[in-house]
Length: 286
Image (tube, rainbow, N blue to C red; front, side, top):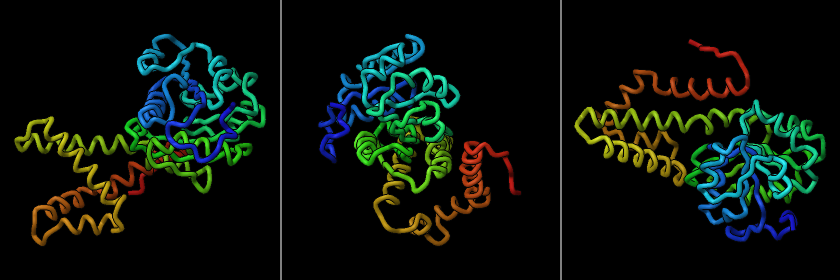
């Protein structure tokens, strides 16, 4: 059974479906790792391919079936994740086009490649789902945004959701072009948050804390703050104001961040990442 006509919604642990990854790099490891850790699918039902044996080392260590042949993965799996870099994707899809059938669901995690581009490369009326997961899906606290292609059925959309929802927040966007925007907001921003944790930890070390303690404290504080935003109803700025006593220590720090152009710098970083995705010229509105 392809699994596409199964009863919906499928609960974690019930998915008897073979899932393949064309490309066994970081994104394959993050998504497959998240699915396996959440009990959505067993490692024995996950297949991955790469161009070299070296590229399969980590996939093998995770217990996945591996191959150097992309077509073999497509033959064995109903759901196929295209997890290669955007510039490699056209060649890979052309290579497997003849092996793909209308029973397949093709899920792309490649940035900047549209559903129509994938449909044209395959040359068949195949269900295609463009997604953009960020790397924290590996610890099941990620964000996955998605938009279905022309031939993607409601059942296939639900199948994609069932597979990827355990990885974090799963959201079907109102239009495909917004995936480019989330690329900067959710895809690139983990790097910005890691930099923030590092900067905070450096400050802790500067003032006498052991580094590992400083890193843990900074990261956990960030996690807790994010939880308050997600689980509460107050605006982030109101939450910040709640911590600031008149003439106190927090408002002193807030003043220094504001003086350094903190908000504008963060907005610039996100907008720059989005514009790079959209292929626009970098521009600075100073």
